[in-house]
Length: 209
Image (cartoon, rainbow, N blue to C red):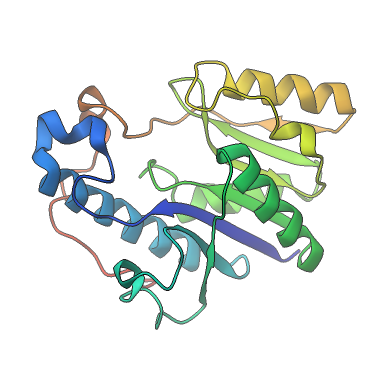
C-alpha cells in the first residue's frame, strides 16, 4: 500500500519558530534546533520508503527560506494555506487521499518518530482506518488515515491537552477502526530538551541513509 507522508513545518527562521524554546536556547539556537528537527524528520520520512513525501510549508514554498529544500529528490513542497492547524491538515489529508491509499500527517517536533515507527504506522493502516501516535503532552505526533472525515479536524483546541483523546473519541463515533500506539515525546518547551539525542547540535542533511 502506497502512503503519502505529509510533513507540516514552519520555516526555521530565528524568532518565528520554536519561540517557547528561546528562553533556553536563544532565537538563533531555537531556529537551529528547528532546522535539525526538520532535516531529521525528512530524512526518516524519505528513508521509510513508504511513498511520496510532501513538505507542507509555512510560509509558502516560493519563500526564500525554503530554497535549500526544493532540489531534494522524492520531495515535493506545497503551501499549508490559511486557517487553523485543523483546516490546514484537513486540506492536505483530503488531497493526499485522492491520490494515495493512505496518508500519514506528522510534524517535525518528535525526533523519536523514526523510519521504523513510520513503517509501523503504515502497517497498522493495512488493517485499520486510522493509526494515531499520541504525544506525551496530550496532542499527537502522527496520524495515519485511509479514510477522510472533516470532523477529525474541526473544533479542536490545537495545542491543548486532550487533542489525542478528542480525535480517538471522534474516530469511535464515526465507527472507524483505529489503532493507538505508544505515546512519544515532542520538543516544545525547555523541559522537553532532555528527549533530544546528544547529536542534535550537528545538523544533518535531509537525505536517506
